[in-house]
Image 1 (cartoon, helix red, strand yellow):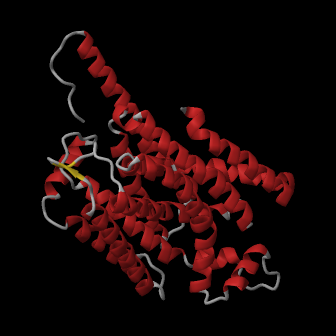
Image 2 (image 1 turned 120 degrees about the horizontal axis):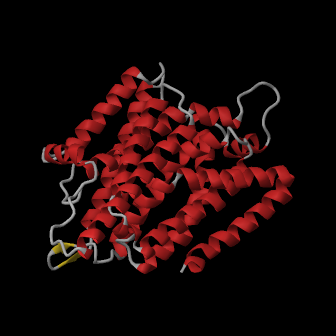
Image 3 (image 1 turned 30 degrees about the vertical axis):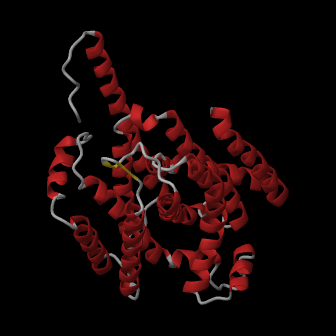
Length: 357
């Protein structure tokens, strides 16, 4: 199974490194490898969240995610999307933006990297709002299994107040625009954040509308197909965009060459993140490590907060990734402890279930 899931990613990695070697020599190949490793290490929480959605989709749509989704991730989110941001925000001709990306200016004018960085407040507001709503809707939902029970259970009770996630996320956006956004972009941050909110509500709502149901209502055992799966696929792609753009900005600390960035972050990194996602689904990892989904959502909540804060304060991308790794690692460790406790009770014939959370 491992070879079947990761085989294509390994082949693409080798081909990407060869292309990087031909394009940029040994230095280009080394930078490509570094970016690929960076993307995989910083995006594990993305893979876990993807897996929670992907396990609800049919095998056909899982293959679509691993094929068509990769094309969108590589060329759409890691290459075309940053170029489009420069086209729109700098009001620049698309060909000029591409030329600027490939040939940094020497006359003192703004580089492609600088123009992309200038657009960071809008992108951070959009992505931060989308991820914040994803986190809040999870944490405000009442569920039998909790991880940080002392915190999750009171939040779930508070979540009985309808639309509380919208209120909290909207309040966070207003505070960010008022106290963190630089002068001149406050209204832009508000608009971008509202667009992120609308995007989440529309895609999440459409996915729920077409959700396949069994005789007892929605069921995780009933795989989404057709329109339901299509909207879940769109949801995953927007989620990937929210995760990936900050990584694209951080990649410029390593290299400003968009081709190397597309090869490293896109072809290598995005492909392996998708393979990890499929592996988690096929291996049943989310069932074995029951707190993993909780840890991933808390990591997303932290990322949303970091994106909002980054509008006014520079935050190192490595710190962003380490926060996610810490939550995921803690969730896996506590899952292992819980499983061992249950196994011990089963061996002793103790009918009392292991405490939840």
